[in-house]
Image (tube, rainbow, N blue to C red; front, side, top):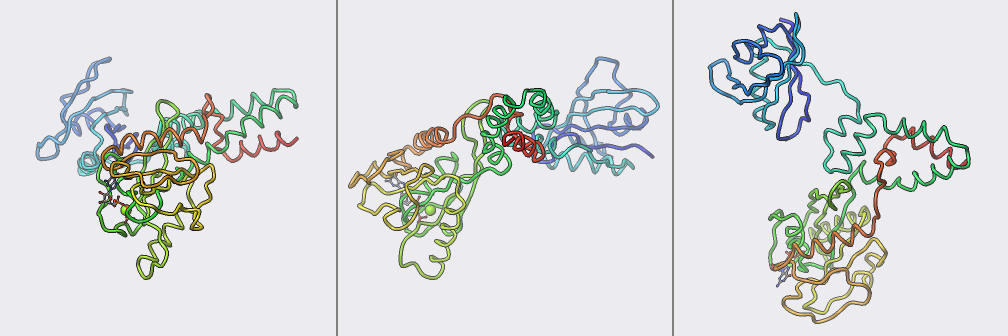
Amino acid sequence: MSSTFRLLSAGEFVALSIWELKGAEVEIAAALGCEGFPSEGDFPLIKIRDANGDEIDQGVFWVRERGAIARVELHLHGGKGVKQAFANHLKAQGWKSSSLHCTASYKRFLKAASPLAARAWYALASGGSFVLREALQAMPPSQRKKEARRILSYSYWAQILECPPAVVLAGPPNAGKSTLFNAWLGRRRVVVSPHPGTTRDCVEASIVLGKGDDAFEVRLVDTAGIWDEAVGDDSRAIGQSRQALREAWRIVWVLDASVMSRVPWEEGEGGQGEREFLVLNKCDIGSAWSPPGVVACRGSALTNGAAMAEELERCLLNSVGVPPANPAKILLETSVRETLQAWASD
Ligand SMILES: Nc1nc2c(ncn2[C@@H]2O[C@H](COP(=O)(O)OP(=O)(O)OP(=O)(O)O)[C@@H](O)[C@H]2O)c(=O)[nH]1
Ligand SMILES: [Mg+2]
């Protein structure tokens, strides 16, 4: 048997899995348990049964090409188990699996976790950067230099999309970092307790910042509380927190407003720079003090954490600016970036 099948959609958990089957019409019909092929323009919903006649899924049957070797597309549900069961079903009947040959950028497009990443990787996969380069090539040198510089000023978006950056929640123990982390995610992801030193390992989760086409993915990181005189496991946990702070794209310092405490930079942590934000938490039980410097957000992660997260998202978005309207200007391809760098410095 020379019939082959392959998965056209992304491999991870997705709502739909899209399959391509190539082979003789009778073999395809037998594999799908149909009487025959639907008439042209007809896309029936068919039930897929395994060798025992048990239904494993149902999906849309689309005939792309008829002939000695027919090609059909099948849209099934996207769960991992369904995909595995369908592939097993075909293999048991002698079908061979073939892989999808697509470019690295198209694969990144399929896996994109945010609208901005999807738009930028799609622009690259469909030749957008080539069109951009051609357009610049046709410009007079002085205009090209100016335009290349302008486009290169968006380079940080390429870094953000290549590797989602870390927004690190840090501060003293028991200040409410993990409570805010959970509230931000909208689910109980990490343990919260009244005992200082609850969080040990850094825990991260993906979140999407912003709305609409420009929304992009970042990694929200919960860390162990930092305090002096820690020894043993506590000291190792704080070592991890400090590592996370060094690698952070943005730092959100969470402090307890109800008890007098020192601000991180008085303890040699952080530097109150533009990429750091101060949060005063536990305002529901008191505001014993107010730290020097700008407070990005005050509130109670316990009673109103979602609103605090929203406020912080606004601060983070304001700190990063707006990506270019044309996603091809986010130069994800090194060779195009290098060409523009050469033009910009001509
Ligand atoms: N009243 C009040 N309690 C809060 C608030 N946020 C957190 N807590 C409580 O404070 C305690 C510590 O909260 P956590 O979120 O575990 O604090 P943490 O900063 O992660 O602590 P470590 O992991 O030990 O560094 C828990 O009992 C929380 O329920 C708040 O806004 N108001
Ligand atoms: Mg914690």
